[in-house]
Amino acid sequence: MNNKKPNVVVFLTDQQRWDTSSLHGNTMDLMPNFKRLADEGTHFSLSFTPQPVCGPARSCIQTGCYATTTEVYKNGIPFPKHLPSLASYFNEEGYNTGYIGKWHLGGTPFSPERDKQIPVPKEYQGDYKYWLGCDLLEFTSREYDTRLFDKEGNEVKLPGYRIDALTDEAIRYIDREKENPFFLFLSFLEPHHQNTSDNYPPADVYKNKYDNNVYIPRDLLTLKGSSPYQLSDYYSLVKKLDDCLGRVMDAIKSLDLDDNTIILFATDHGNHFKTRNGEYKRSCHESSIRIPIAAKGGVFNNGGTFKHLFSLVDLAPTLLDACNIKQNVKMEGHSAIPLINRKTDEWEDVAFIQISESTVGRAIRTNRWKYCVEDNTLDPHKNKNSLTYKESYLYDLESDPYELVNLVGMDVYRVVSDNLKETLLNKIEEIEGYRAEIINAPLIYTPGQRVLQ
Image (cartoon, rainbow, N blue to C red; front, top):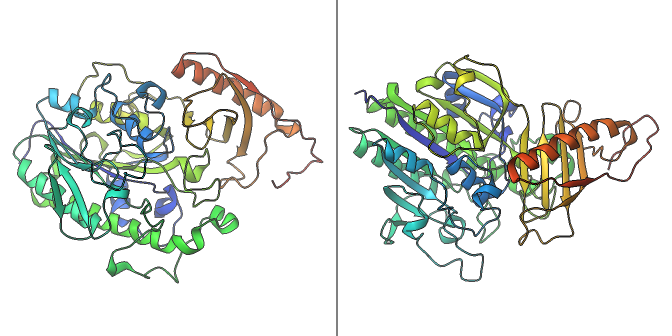
């Protein structure tokens, strides 16, 4: 069976570190199916979220625009109706579009009532034709109690462990739609924590499996945070997700759709395990912003390693380009397809990061440097940007990839900071439409060696 238009399945996880994969040094073989996806297709080895928190990041994925453009600069803001979603584009091309799982763009407020089941209103469902979703799956379901809503707002309880339950529903959808081109967005909660208990509950089969065999990234080895009592269960969730990625890949192969289906794996942000602030993300650090992304099928096959900096804002234009779908509204992200097809080598290797809720912050990530500024005088839940930022972080990722030494303010790096400052100011002006000011960090005179901070 070979539809003329390629099918697309997006397999989205939540809060997954990039270094959970063996492709980035993890020794536990948690993601063999992800590795297979990357080996057979294209591995975006330097991938980043433009906003390290759920709702804003998902608005960027769906629209190809930054969070200040989508106006979803923090959680609790509904899907931006002034911009088309991914589903809108695929609908116009005659695709059947489906969404299964966590949405987090329904505008559900964080309140004492958030544990109640509240269907996402149709106007905030992103124009998906088939819908089986929930806004705050982390509050409104449990690991063995998966409750979602159909398009009309009727509650649907799925049997099985939550990751398996969503995967089962996705495979049923693929089987139903196999005769027509389809675009399926499958969105998991895991390996995000269960908010109601602040833990990472694994499937029974993986309980305690990794208690005595844990790869510990250098930042967690040094800073620890909550990782000593959470990391092994977190890895169990990663393993279960990869098992289910394999099940989706097998289902597509068994239905003779393998030659005409794009599968893309991504996540919305990382997890620093309370090492950088009081929770798990919302910071400029690699553990918070760097993510795993790979794709196979269609133009992605045999694409090798995409070594440029790739952002989630680039995901929508890249997928549309892979399916020969034109943008009718200009996106702020860029398609990677011309580079994958080796028709150009032009790419801006700068990732622009907007940070909210923990601070009003902005950062850039280059191949070597991380530079972050903040305005801690503003309420980060009420202000999406600032006119005046102060320098907060500078990291040399070449010699300090896990960002254990903050170089900000050091006299020997002033020239580096000045160059990065100008780049960041230009990005703010380009994306947000105004010229901000950045105040230098207090100068630190160093005796020829770096100082741990």
